[in-house]
Image (cartoon, rainbow, N blue to C red; front, side, top):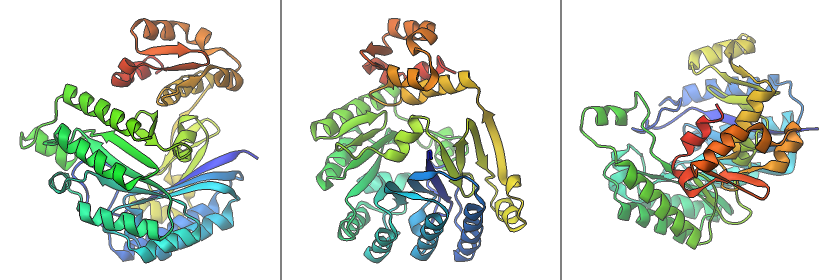
Length: 376
């Protein structure tokens, strides 16, 4: 039986962050109840029969809702699927939305990994981007998590935020290293159209940082994390040995996953599809047993599309694409199959071929999008 990843989208937030374009709503508990009833019914209707190796509960702010909803969700997943004993089960948590009791209930139901959305240890920066918490609340959340018995914890940080200086960023990194989480994600700010932050920048009330400053921030952050025992294993992700995110690695290795909930994405049998991002539509279709009406098909891949995507996803990893794994999966040597693209990128010093690996160079990390474009 093949393995499967599961993604669950919980679209509720206390307040929308200024940079966020994810599908999320500031709804009350009345809507929580309606949503989870539909979500459990959607899971119940799933016909896929594969062993589950990872579960990722994201949002939104999954930790905002009462723990009873998360417990009901986990019980439904256990009832419906065979979840492997060593499965990685992650939930996203925002500071200020959990206490020790809620985290203990997560642990007892089988969740074994937390991803804490901090973004910065600087309270002024947090306020600027519309986060609902401060650094002190993060400290309390982290302490609660440790007391609840969580060992595998990720902390999200963000760089290149308007007004953020290199010193402010590196101080955030240093302070988080002191907590000794197993995993740290460091994302560059992406300005998304229609967000409050995009409007502030368009109206000249804030200014994006220069690209050279952003890249300097990235490389200094990388150096500091590696110096403190974190392996850089994907463009934006660092982990202590053995604590790389299994869910994300499976996605980058083109493994299959199924998404449940509004706006969730799936990849099954070479098909990429997603659920509607309309809350009322999602609920109504499930209530009427018209599950297929929620689904939007994005792509049916042929062999060539799979091969190209495998390169794009694989090159996100610092170790790159394994030549032997590519041959095993597609029955062709990528060095021959993509010889024109690879030769061009090697000549431009954007990728290198090292024994069994095709991977980004230092320059390639700065211009990864140019590399990916060659395989589109």
